[in-house]
Length: 224
Image (cartoon, rainbow, N blue to C red; front, side, top):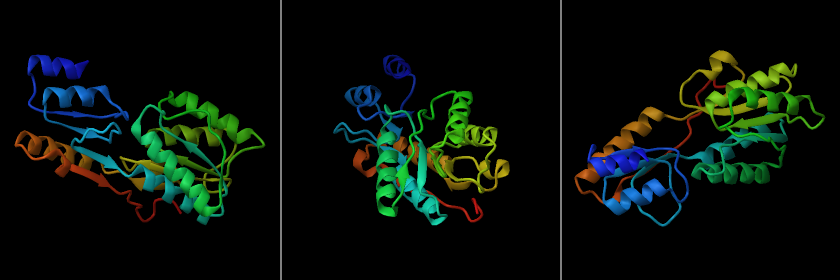
């Protein structure tokens, strides 16, 4: 474990970790050893620690709303792997949105950790099927590029045959396909918040005072 190496060698005064799991062994180890740290994402194991997170539940709920507002009712979700904490946040927001806005889910048998070529291929098969969705929510910007490629390989187009909503940390999707509806996740802000939290923890500030969650920002012109 890189974290164990840092702890054993004393090669850092603080640590930032990402791809957080609900009961993350790195978080337990850092807490036990008293190393100042912050996480990009939340845990769910009863440990109080500094974190910065993006409100994925709000993103998924708002994404469904935007699709239904465009007349879309059969919606697929490209979700993160189930081992990560934000999987639960995305699923709760998505399912609540389906319930609140009267839509149904079309299952998508791949997640954002799959190779981009695999995502493209699975989406192409889905879009060629009689059960093809008319809306897709994508929980990662890079994966949305592969989703769009799969849609186009099936002879269909975002903005015509279906609509797609994706979050992104770099504003690139609308250069590729202006019709994609995008929400911005500010990773620069996340980095600043986590760095401040680690430094504050080194200075002895209590961890419960060093927790923040950012909201999705829907830029004007991000999609139609």
